[in-house]
Structures are given as structure tokens and as C-alpha cells.
Image (tube, rainbow over all chains, first blue to last red; front, side, top):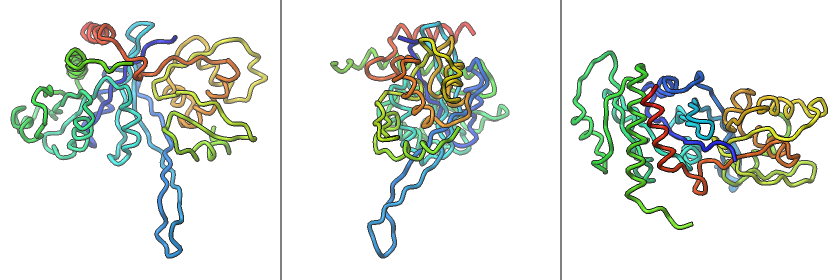
Amino acid sequence: MGPQSIKVIVAGGFGTGKTTLVGAVSEIPPLTTEEVLTQVSEGVDDTGGIESKTTTTVALDFGRRTITNELVLYLFGTPGQDRFWFMWDELSRGATGAVVLVDPRRLDTSFPAIDYFEVRGIPFVVAVNLFHGQRRHTLDEVREALQLEDSSVPLLECDARDAPSCRSALIVLVEHAMARMAAVPEPAG
Amino acid sequence: MASADEQWVDDTAGPLYENYSRIGGRARARHNLSLDTQVCAVGTVDRAALQVEHAQILELLANRWLSVAEIAAHLRTTMNVIRVHLSDLLEERLVAIGAPSSRRSRPTKEDLQKVINHLRAM
């Protein structure tokens, strides 16, 4: 019952253009939704063992694209700060894959996202976001610097401000995810 | 739309999309309400008789399926709060939910190909 939803994650360090990419594909202007996360932590005072709860509100930018009336694509941007890994887990559940936007001038800001998807075996592509046509590195240099464990991970240039470029990155991701589906046998049940 | 109930809902240890809470001594049903779970209004009811938030949700979902994330975004509240309301509305049989992207309802290769075709045609 209801449309099948396809969920794609858009990840990348601050300022890499996640929301811009979402907006380039979404049929509506990007929305922001919020999740309140509760953390239980041990108190550190002398009386010891006192639990305290803190709540944090995590905001996610996302968009949608209706494919058919039985199929809808969602693009969810990862939270601004890297530390909300619990939210990443929720985003990743059943996700088709991720587009990881990379700023070649600040490669290390994308390492946490790449590590996250690699460890979990979630299909992802690396979209190198060039600003103002400036190209200080080649894709090969970026690939080497990223130290991707899997050499079959697609790496492509992407300008988040250019809608066709964004669509290309998404197409490459979905194709990559499909190829992975063919290769890995589905678990039973 | 934040209410006193929200504090209790947050007091859970389970995964985000499973909400247990006790309100007025009654345990809430557990429903799978993930970010992209599709929801639609069903049945008929006199909306004037409903609490405001429920009426707003039903109006939003009158003739379409929306995800939990969209409902929360459009109504400018958190997904946590929306899940509580949707649980109520599910129990009242005023909304229906579809299966989220999960192990039990994954997109097929045919679905993914449709996405690719659609993106290419844009």
C-alpha cells in the first residue's frame, strides 16, 4: 500500500553544496525536518552514577521527486555536524545509497562520511565539487588522496549549482547501486 | 505544536522510529514510522471533533501520500511529535501507512531503472 519510496543520502562536509544538490533534483523547494535525539550520559560529579539526559534537535534538509504514482525518490541531506551518527543510522536504514560531495580543497572534511558508508557497505559515489571552474586537482589525485578501499567506487566531477551535473551524479549512484544488487545475493527472508 | 506529551515520547530507549510511551496510563501502539514512511488519510471523520493537530495532519494527507518527514516539515514540528499523532490516528483508523524503505520493502532493480530513466528525461 502506498508508493514505494527510494531514499538517497546526500553527504559531505560543510559548504559542499548538499542542499543545493537536493534542490536541483527536488520538485519542491528543499524542506527542513527535525528529529529530537535524546542522549543519556553518566554524571561526572562525586556522588557518581547520576544519569542525565540531554536532548538535541537535528535538522535535515531534504527534497522529493515523484517518479510515478507508485514510486517516489527522496534525497536527504546529512545533518550539519558529523557527530549525530544516530541520525545517520536512521537515514541509512534501507537507503539505496549516498552521494558524497567533496571539496578538493578540504578533502578531510569528507573522510567521516566516506568511512561511514565504507564500513557499512552502503553504495556511494564521490562527487567532486569544483567551485568557479577552478580545478587544482585531477580526479585521479583526489581518488588517491581519499584512499578509497574499493576502487570500483565511482568518482566524478559535480557542480552542485548545475542541475544536469547533479542529476548525473545521482544517475551514477543509482546505476552503481543496481550493479551492486546484481553482484550481492539478497539475504534470505 | 509542541505539547507536554513530547517530553514523555523522548524518554525512550528504542530506535527512533519505534515509539513507546505511556500517556494517561495507556501504552501507545508501536508503528514503523521511519523518515520516508508513506502516510495517507483514510476513512471519514468530522474534523471539527478532532484535536487541532490531528485535523491538520488529515487535511495535509487528504488526497495524497506524504512521508513522515514531509508531514513534520509542512506542519513545522518535529518528527517525534508527528509520530505520536500518527500513532493515535492509526489507532483511530484515520490514516494508513505504507512500508518504508526497509528490508521487507526494498526498491527493485526495475524501480531503480525507472528513477534513472526519469532523471535522464528531466
